Every structure is written in structure tokens, then in C-alpha cells.
Image (cartoon, rainbow, N blue to C red; front, side, top):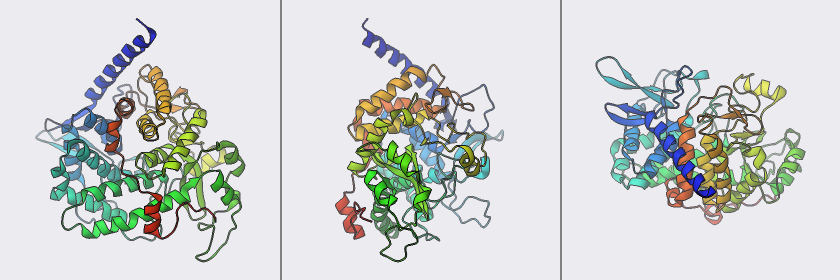
Length: 480
């Protein structure tokens, strides 16, 4: 047998073993599959890892969809919709109208089963799951694209569910940006890491949820919401593409910013203080032709950390321009050791260290530098890296990453995350047999082998001209 044939057979065995773990993870409610647990690690206390998290289930659901196993996704969407609060709450400690839970579990009182939802009230630090609602809409649209079952999305209860989420997102607040204002811990990074404000991950998901909702909200009674979406989308796109983008040209413009400007003609619109940014380190780190979307932008704030999920989703969903998407992939290619290393891929780079780590994380012992959310490596991000590679015709990057993952993940028993600057160490507090690590690997393979699956999570692009006309300004102008 030739060497490449051996690799193929080893890959088949790996896929079969991985699928067996996925099968064992399926949660049943009233004899119907409704989701997957977070992890199957029997060596430690379950805590909430025996629950189904909405964000965790998304890659599982996409994998089930491409495999034609649509029933579990249908059931998941129906049951989670029932958990969404439909009435206003007078108690500030209760979940607000329209919010989707972070997770749920099946509970039995001895007579009947019911689903118990967690909206963050039981989570560490009681964090609010802003991303759950956005992922739910994105997944509903993926289900419709895969199955052509428009009747589900057009049902009154589903139309109302989408409306309630968007009413939360589009409500008038003490904020004048088109982006979504959220607290720390509101997304995959669900612990304190200095992402409060307008973090890129939430903005990428917000954009995708708006695009998905625009396709799904066709029934009468949605006219006001549709108008609100049409008004918000172009200025959201323009805002992200202009103010979040960092490359050499943009870095040079920021380096010469003046502060304390006033009025409509202000160049430094967010009053970014130049000395607050690591210009010299960024100038060394940014490769020629490379760039990325910043982690956060706000009043006197430009977070120059690279956040993988937000950047990859911006590529996949066409939030980033084609040129920007290529720039992000060039950055990943040229800074491979920093962003991928020994396990694809790092959730954020660089890590918060020393006094910055202490002050921003509150000395979080789980988020020590180069661990967990603070620049740990997360295998689940493989599916997004693969999708972004296919989207930009840079498939060699996905192949390179998958070769690393295939050599380690099964042997390491599918960890939740890896530690260290290169991701060499299995995460100190990492669960084994983490389901989204397993399905992230399998889904990445499916997308690479069958690019026709990409429309499940991608959209037709908004061109610069379309956005410019809608916003009455040219988005690619950095002549500030």
C-alpha cells in the first residue's frame, strides 16, 4: 500500500471514530433528537458541559445539514424557540423579551420531561448570551437553504421569534453607532477580556443575522422591521469596513492622527490617542498585502488585537470586501506561527500579559496569558478557517491546518482548547471529547471537499458601490 493510501485509510478511521463520538453526544427529548451536549469528558464533573449550548450546536447543526440529517436541526430550532421569552419582564434579573438562552438541558420530574433553559443566570459571572440569538437566526436560514423548507421559517411563531430578536438588536439606545453595544462576556469569549463595547465577533454575527432575517421576513406585519434592516445594513457594513480595518495604509493614517477634534469635519472621529496603540509592533507584524478587522472600536478605543472568529465570519458572510478578505488570509498565511501554530487556531492574538492581564481580566486564573480565551488555540475554529479558505480560493491554508489537526486531535482525545504561544499544550482546564472540536474538524472536511455547502452560511456580497450609494459616502476613503 502506498503512503498516500495509508493516509486516506487513517483519515477514514479518524472520521468514523469522530462520528461515533458525535452520535453519543446527541440529546433526546420526548424521544426526539434536539441537540448535542458540549462535551463527553467523564473524568471531571459535568458542570454545564452536559447541556446543549446554542453557539456550540451551530457547527454540529451545519454538519447534520450537509449530511442530510435535518430532523435534529428542525427539532432544535422548534424547541429553542419555545424557550424564548415572549412577554416583557418586570424583574431585571429575568431574561428579556426575545432573548435566546445560552444553553438548555433535559430535566425529568419523574412524570414528564421538560427543557430547562439557562439565560446566563447560572453561568460564571452571570454573562448575557448576546450571540445565541444571532446564531439562532443564522442557523434557521442555513436550515432553510439546506432543506428548502420555507414553511418552517414562515410559520407565525418563527416570524415572531425573529422579530423579537431584532427588536432587541434594533431598539433605540444610548448609542449612536450602527454596531451593537454589548457587555464583556457576551459571545464565545464568555469571560472578562476587555471586549465590552462593540466587539468584532458580535458585529460579524449581527450583520449575518440581519442578512438572514432580510431573507426570511417576508410575511405581512414585518414591514417596519424590514425597513429598519434595510436602513441599518449599509451603514453597518460601511462602518465596519472603514473604521475597523487595519493595514499599512490605515496604520499610517492613524499614526498621524490629531486628537481633541470637534465637529463633522473631524478626521479622528473616535478621538483615538495615538500613544495608546502599539504602532511599532504592528508595523513589524503586518505583512505586505495583509490586514485585518480590529477587535473593537469605540470612544478613544481601537483594540488592535486579532480576533479570529470575527475576522473569519466577516470573510464567510461577505461583511469584509473581497480585497479585505484576501488581506486577512494573507495575514494568516504570513503570520501562521502566531495565529495557527501547532493547532488551528488561536482565538485572539496577542495575549494580555503582566499588569494588563491582571487589570483587564481581573486576574482570571483560567485566562492566564496564552490560555483559554486569552490567546488559547481552539480546534472548533477549523470549520471557519476552512470556509474562509474556500471562499477566498486559498484552499492550501485549510489543507495545511487540517494536516496539523488530523495528526493530533484524536490522539489528544479532542480537547476543548490548547495552551501556549504555539498551542503545543492541551489546555490546563480543557475538557476532552469536546463536541464542537470534533464537529469543527468534520465540518471543515465537508466544506473543503464540497464547496457547494458554503451558501449555508454565506451571502451575496454588498459591493462598495452599493454601500456608498446607500450611505452617501465612499467607504474605501481613508484620507483622514
